[in-house]
View 1 (tube, rainbow, N blue to C red):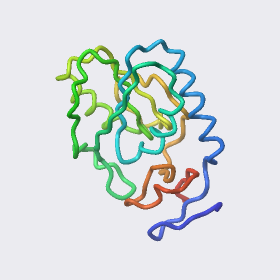
View 2: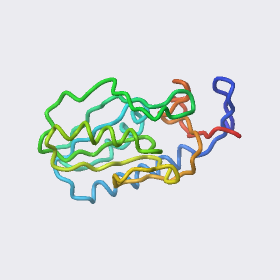
View 3: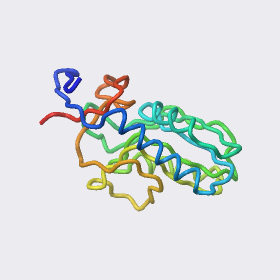
View 4: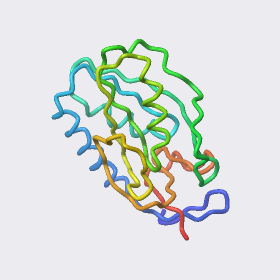
Length: 178
């Protein structure tokens, strides 16, 4: 479908699933070549679940583990500016090399909150991998180590990302039609 309608908003196809596959392949190559030892992937739910699933199957580093935390900062198509932790991390991750997995990074509020939460765990290092990034609105000093694709500040859905909990199941990524 070239266009879809979700909750009376029209979205047009933006990134085809084949391009998404290529992006994930490139991110996995960079992570595999990074020499990160004993990685612990921390996927941010809900949006990153498909990205995390596709990426982790391409990681060839021994002693790799993955877990999930659920955070939210969106209401409708606007960021609330406040990150609310819904489900926290319960595993012992001390002395691990953490790789945070995000579907999309815009302002960086979620990443900042995750970094703050990880301070108490005595981790060895923290890296960030994201499928999409909006550099025009990113306003934090945290380095994003593995960026799949930089996009403008458009609202997108599909491939795990949603509009009011709709559209996560779409295989392509769509952007809001103006």
